[in-house]
Image 1 (cartoon, rainbow, N blue to C red):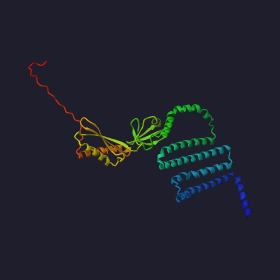
Image 2 (tube, rainbow, N blue to C red):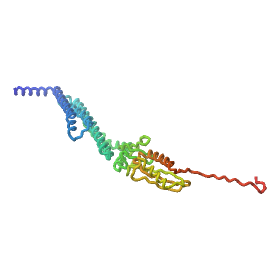
Image 3 (cartoon, one colour):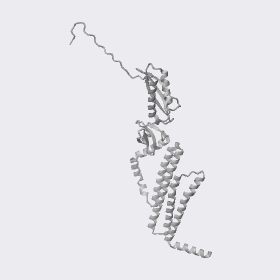
Image 4 (spheres, rainbow, N blue to C red):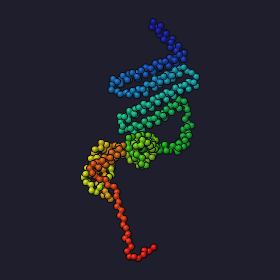
Length: 361
């Protein structure tokens, strides 16, 4: 019985070896079975392990890799089947290069998605490294593109010598045409190294625009103003201009409220009222404490200034509005008068002519 089975198996192997097409079909079926097994392993075994153990494997990552994995296995099976069949050399080359190109594209897109997902996870876990993570992500994408293009050229046996020979002239032309892009790229590197601001900071540009930094890219920095308008500033300009960062070294923002009171006001009452207004506002930081300063003697009033710190720069407009309303209300309640400029005009009439002499005409 054993000898009969061995003979049957040997005859089957010989038949498959002689029938190339049947062998290719069997190879494809075996790789399809392997792809299905791997897909089941990723879907069930890895999920089961992640639930039972302390290893955190996000469902998003599993969703990213499971389909490209079995597609890649099928493409590898197709390459093996093509090599087994031994078709015409030109047809074999075209089919092999096509399958290899598809394999590179699938792997490249998958790595790009994985890199994006990992960077998003790192950004949520390490918000202080957001700029470094995004910069590394951009560099990784460029490297993936370069490696992918190089592999595709290799698979299709495209001679790059003519391109390299003309690279000197083309490089000069490209450098002149893309000088602004190159300047913006190196400006982004300067921003990454110096870190004058980070994502989420409130900055004021030299031209006067003020807003929150929403993204620091390779080419430009995007700012969202309080009017919900987005400003895109090239990094070369940002790196060479004066920028005021209102969020550092402390996240709070100093607010100055200038006002005038009458000369006959009780100064202690004025100062206590202003401090009470500042302390009662929930958006005002407790440290440092609010302060009141008597600045100057005006023409018809005493000039005061209330100094306090909003918890975040984004609260500046709203806090100033609330403080002004509260100050006006409390001054009315405590009988503190806010004077307004006043001018007295005196009209002097000329005395009549009593000499009896006629006036000169």
